[in-house]
Length: 157
Image (cartoon, rainbow, N blue to C red):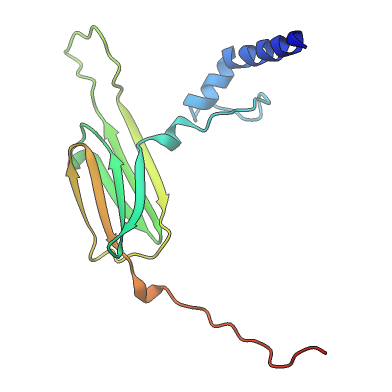
């Protein structure tokens, strides 16, 4: 019984050592889903970046996005129907520096959030404070309509 567990572990470890597995996770352009039947237990890294919260408070939707180190010139926010899109770029590489440790990468991001309610774009606002971008979107109550339900007045016998 323990040998079966060890064999399963070894098979899984070999899968994670394959170069195609890591390309599939970290590099969308080079990933070829038809080339290898890998089962990816991890969602793509891009789905988690940047971290966001979306909640309702005081009659408006509030979106909070963690973007430490960015200024407003490096972030763009747009709304198309009920899809809120946040794009930007982290630029940390300075070509004339002599790095001894470089963990922060230059990277572009795109985060799309489907809003649960229609919002009023004209009364929206945002602020960037301590690396958190907060976007305030008032709910558009005029576009939320009830759908009437007609009942058949005849009852089956």
